[in-house]
Amino acid sequence: MYKTLIKRLIDIVTSLIGLLILSPILLILIIVLSISNNGKPFFYQKRPGKYGNIFTIIKLKSMNDKKDENGKFLPFEQRVTKTGAFIRKYSLDEIPQLFNVFIGDMSLVGPRPLLIDYLPLYSKEQKKRHNVKPGITGWAQVNGRNAISWKQKFEYDVWYVEHLSFLLDVKILLLTIKKVLLKKDVNSETNLNMPPFTGSDSY
Image 1: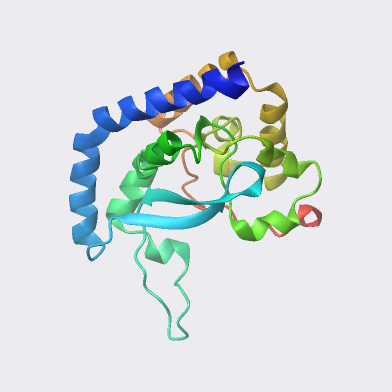
Image 2: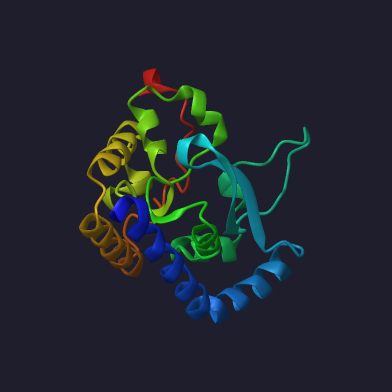
């Protein structure tokens, strides 16, 4: 009952309340980011959702679009703006994903939606992470996030799928709030982004 109905009802109510409560902060961030990002406050990207179905994720834009002489984007560290680093530090860039939750693309809790390019690289076991909707936060996020290896991350994701419950979701949400407030494991200072996943044999 929880997996098929109650979890979705909680997602709808909680995301709507969250959007209403956070709307003043979101509006301020949109204005600031519109100025610092040349009128582009949002970041849109196609990501795989439940069963690998593609949806468009919405985040606040934390990086500029600067490219090198060959037309390729500069390294991550060179494109993160000061404002972007701040909103990532406090996970404020995730706020617009509440809209993804409200319309049903995502859930509050679930494995994080990764890149479409990774879909053919997963092992049979790792593919289980797509048996549920992706989440704004998840078991891997409260157990190290970018500070852990891909192997550990996927093991946490699959464990969550196999043990999904109301109490587990509540635990993850409470731990997420704690980590955001303590700024612990939100993003590794030395490596804000995980290195690309290149397949199970690359561990």
